[in-house]
Length: 431
Figure 1: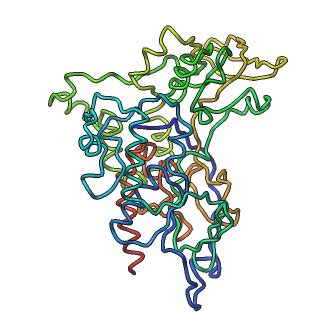
Figure 2: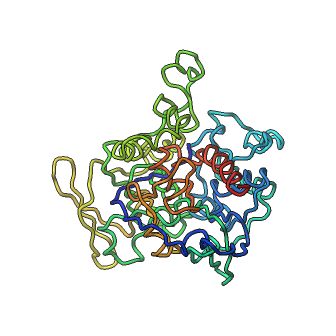
Figure 3: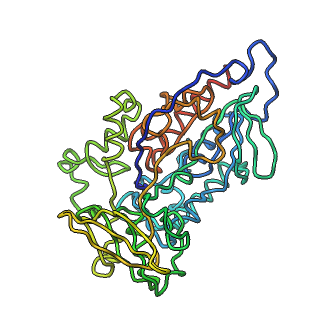
């Protein structure tokens, strides 16, 4: 159930029909030589899982990106995953590829539920998975993506140009940080996003406000407090809604009927999200956007509660109205549920306010390509095979949630997306 706080809203972007010369290749001409049939951009759980599934099916591909960069460099270093053990594996056809198999082979304590998975353990497992199943990963960022006669042209950070027949965007959350407009007027040195912090040593002795009530906010608040900062959580929510700790009754048949367990949490709504993602895109758009926004909203893990309650100040039921500088410090004005205005002063404010998927915010996407991609909310509209409205361009991961549901906000969504897309691409390549 590893997740980020995620919200997608926005208008539909106009879609232009590609000209013949701007499609996968010019009609009536010889196909240009390509460097690969499929290029995967991104090396997080979705990118690595898709690469492993393609390799198992013998499909020609190349994958670009720095392995698990978000996980290695942008999550609190002492974090425990919200996902249970059985929901924290990457995807490959082999049963030996799971986190469970990895732990059992090395004598590492593991349970499908109830034993939290540390970030360090997950990174060790993911590194092994990458070395075992995706040894061809090329750790270069893509700086430009545009349509070409071959299909797509990718420019890498070292200046090389790669031609690919098809492209899969597995870019995670890197480009999608959501920061309240009120904070954009502050000096850069006094504001940041939760994505920016793996370590909190630089805030020792400082007063820090964390905006938000989700896992990223509470995990970071715990890290800041442990590191010697004076921390206050400010949020619109009326309470910090921690996940319920595991119970001895969870495996009882009557409990499973009422609240079936899934890789993203218990309940029939979560069961539908995990088992029926292929039906989600047929719901009315307004309903889909509401479900993605509301289902499994901000919720810290049960295990972090003891590090926060009674140790970190909380100002709840408060909406941020304005922010300004007072000398070198920040003054926030908030309004509580009664409409009463309050002020909070601090040295630094962190926006733990989630992410908003919008391909127009991705730095390497060219405007000409973006103009041909229809959206649902601000995210791309996808077919049942994760293909955008521009032929040959696919999207997996959190940016696919508006088409496939809340499952795609979580790492475990790769266990559905990777084999489905790999099977589809194998057929396309062999056609």
